Length: 305
Image (cartoon, rainbow, N blue to C red; front, side):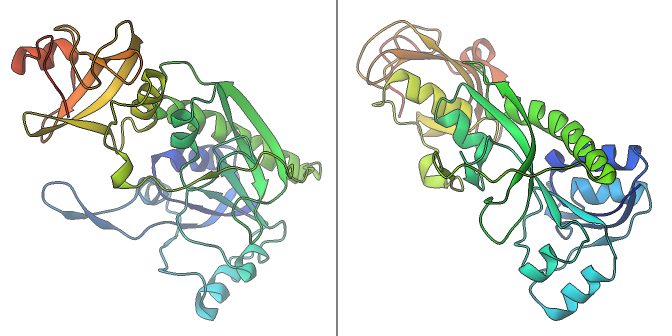
């Protein structure tokens, strides 16, 4: 069994930590985001990874940076065989990357070198990619540039959202990482440099790009909606109220972009149309289109912004 430092924060990271614990490895410490205000009461809330670590009595650290000599000395003192990094959130400087005997393994949500960076799942769906995957790579000082050890590919369905892909990927990724750790333990984990061609960058999702542009072709609008669902959510305005679209599908029809073509939320785009399936009014719970329309009728010819 290996001595491991685990570094991760959101729900996406939890299955990997659970699998590592379940396979009998010793998790010397967990690094995660510090508790932050959340919910209506804005109470300090521990990250999902922190909560799991507490259940198993694993020491938890949440330094603001790993660039100080003090933080690096604490990290080295864990005497880890390897660090496992899954959506952690802080940059790992060279002294940290080199501290574990076998370095730091990262679980990355794309088929590298496509979609290096912060938002690989969302960008893959927004781009209309038909396939994605999850990879175990050895981290270096570059942005997701390290050599790759193992990969698991899977298709992205035409109506899959980023949330659908996220959920599939975090389960596959957890299994992939424990298989990589088993191979590492046997001395059989080999690494292959990434291809130099086909590099793309998954930049962080900005608020300014979340509003739906109905003048774009329907496939692009559809990809935009599903790539931002469920969070942060692509949105439009209806009678001055912001409405998120959580699920859509391509539909028949043509018309002035942003115009309802029927009373079923089929909206015309620059070319073609999309039908809105699940929506969420500001401050309200998500709902299916028929429930939305009972409270907010949208007739043929109505404009959405």
